Amino acid sequence: MDKKGAIPNGTANKKSKQYSTYTDIQNKRLLKALKEAKDHGMNSQQVRADLDIYCPTARITDLRKSGYHIETIRETIDTVKGKHRIARWVLMLKVKETAG
Image (cartoon, rainbow, N blue to C red):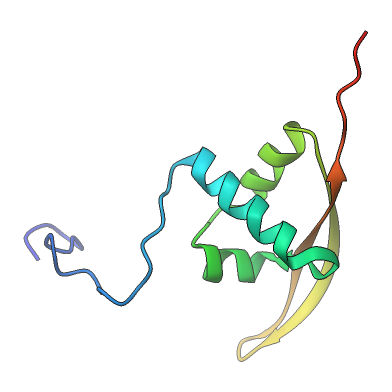
């Protein structure tokens, strides 16, 4: 490592899936995943781990501002460190824009 905490180019884990950190691409990735999850939805832990989106609440807010109706369900999960309250998001439908 040449800089503090930096990984030299080309030495990243080649087996891990690379995702874009661009906001619009993350929004599209999250929307697609929520559509595929249907009524089950996705929780914040899944979004971080599976989609590599580390601020999922901001992406949910973006989708809501774009007209998507996304319900938030609070749930408790158990980890080795204890119980945690997290959000589960379920895509309901896209709100149609009205003229006038």
